[in-house]
Length: 88
Image 1 (cartoon, helix red, strand yellow):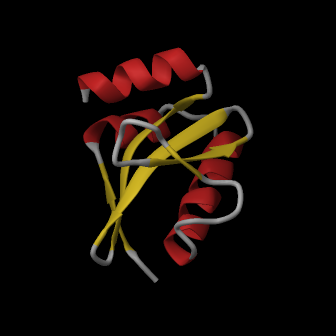
Image 2 (image 1 turned 45 degrees about the horizontal axis):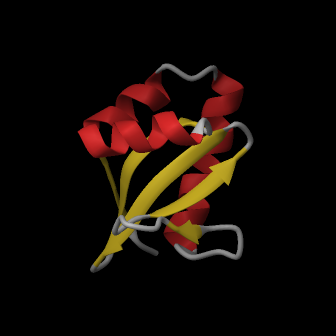
């Protein structure tokens, strides 16, 4: 299993979620720690990241050595997610 590293931005977003959504997103993050490239994950074009969706949320991440690095968790509004990724 991979270890986990969350950016400050991802931690803040998770902290603002309702308990139900928090559990859904965290469950997906734990599954990515087991299998970082499941069938529903896709590489981001032009970025060194992958994306995985869970409900109305998107997780943007990459694997470095033995660590799953979560760069961003946000709503699935594609344009806004990628703008935040560029700022981060």
